[in-house]
Image (tube, rainbow, N blue to C red; front, side, top):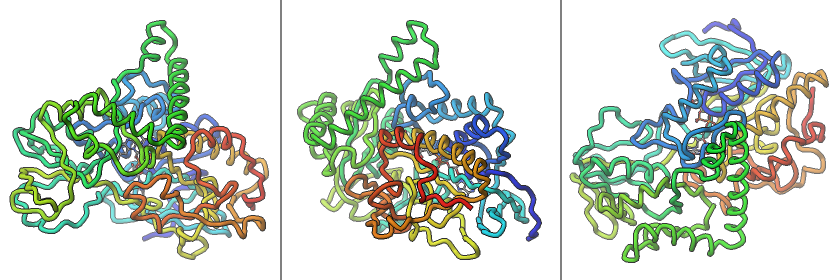
Length: 491
Ligand SMILES: Cc1cc2nc3c(=O)[nH]c(=O)nc-3n(C[C@H](O)[C@H](O)[C@H](O)COP(=O)(O)OP(=O)(O)OC[C@H]3O[C@@H](n4cnc5c(N)ncnc54)[C@H](O)[C@@H]3O)c2cc1C
């Protein structure tokens, strides 16, 4: 391995998913003099939307808010994976971003030096033995939150006995033939809800096996306001902005209602499912979770397709636990035998902390879990680094956009001060502050996060150390947040 520096950039963006492409756009618009590159492991952009190719892959939130603020969305609110890739492709094309992206570049290590005030990255290029060395002033982590290469599969007894095929949605085989097959999908999240109606048409039968229910909301996959504005020939930019504002306004009300009147929201969600599945269906058993609405994201089911597959008898739900896999399927704890040719493990992700990159700060290995988050995006003791961690309840990209604006403002501020480094540091008044988990498990508690919460930074109980996961607070605060609040130390 050579120690020679191959290239230097003012900013390096890790990952060419929706966050990284958005970051590149903002840099080009707001910091046009900064040199930058996007380093991406895969051979194309899209991240999540490139990795996931299972039948029916689609967003579970609307594209007016999951799309960027700067690029109008003109399709139906819930988009297919392909439509999202097409949208990203247009952003890349229209803004000449492709020339900044280095594909098949995997960052292995990131070392900060306080002497040079630079990050040094060791990067492996797919198919090459030698590592490349990049340096940069600022590291913009857009690597998402889960491991793209290794899906999460719990250890189930007897799985080796099963004679059929076991498939994970994250590594869906292109040539999987599921026509006339009996399929069991293990899982209750958005992925299972998406897959089931997509498989149900061709499969003999699809059974959703879930340990516990999830909240879903069935909605027509169109937006009346957007349709009206389009009929009136309103420009796409305006329509995007107006519809986005309306959706966010409505969502804020739903979030507030969920906290204030959880039982009412629960009843509404229950009624929505009941309306499709009918009085004889046990909605409580299969679609009424124990958690409160919005403790996990409520996935939109476009046109209620999941429920229509169940109503038509093409799919069914079993709420039970796995006792063991057998040669021909799954035996549940209550003794049901679910015969299957294919078992799909829609069991979620493994959280990837900082893209599995080995970090050091002045030669010391980074103890990330001992840091405290600054506004949920920077971390105490880690200079010149931002991690884009989007929203769980609202669309991820809303926060990615806000963070992009913040980073550009911060870079200008550093230039204005003649600073080369900025490091979040607890002030004297913060020393006795209570330190809390990165997210409040009472507030949001999906499995992938709960399994790995101990690896994540802490958040503080006050001020810029909080990670609120609240778009409506962030949108007012982040844009005007004081960059000289004494917690950001410039050198
Ligand atoms: C199936 C599915 C559906 C979803 N639907 C929604 C939705 O509707 N609404 C919503 O808000 N959220 C949704 N999410 C969450 C979703 O992941 C995010 O919203 C968003 O796509 C994340 O974008 P990202 O660019 O931050 O990260 P990712 O999409 O994860 O992209 C990260 C990129 O970084 C690259 N990378 C990682 N580590 C390295 C490294 N060490 N070196 C180089 N490159 C690296 C990866 O290869 C990847 O391309 C969904 C997630 C999944 C899995």
